[in-house]
Length: 179
Image 1 (spheres, rainbow, N blue to C red):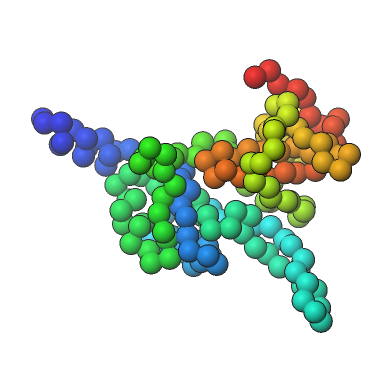
Image 2: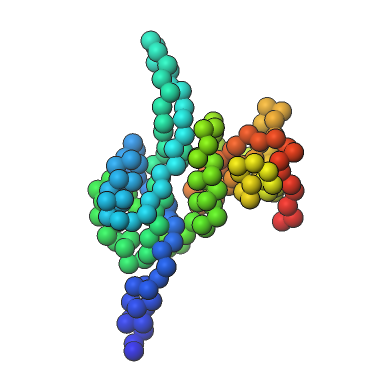
């Protein structure tokens, strides 16, 4: 068996992994729906925000990570997924799609399951001590503790997207972790 045939067999038998795909602005839902119709697992984390216009306020559900959708796929399906018109590209590092660990996806799912206010931030400040939540609905989630407006907040870092998700949580619910 030559090397090319061997790599084709390996990619056909590869286990699906999570990846982040970049979409055109405001096209996240459309990309998510098209991926789902292809019988490929996709995840579009949403959160509630209040938008204000001159005459009214409205509570809306918007993507937690604008322009991003998570997709669980194998390398041999990536080309087919890239044929979706609103999907720009897979997020890559050194020209290879970046795998998102299952634990990170699980953490985001736990956060977005509850009816809580979630805020998003970009990586423009120094992260604090690593902690793990030991009580409550977020038990098992690891992140970095930061101090914002005098309150302790748990921050889950998703470095592949250069974004952070912060969740307000009581200091008594977290335990310091060694790095």
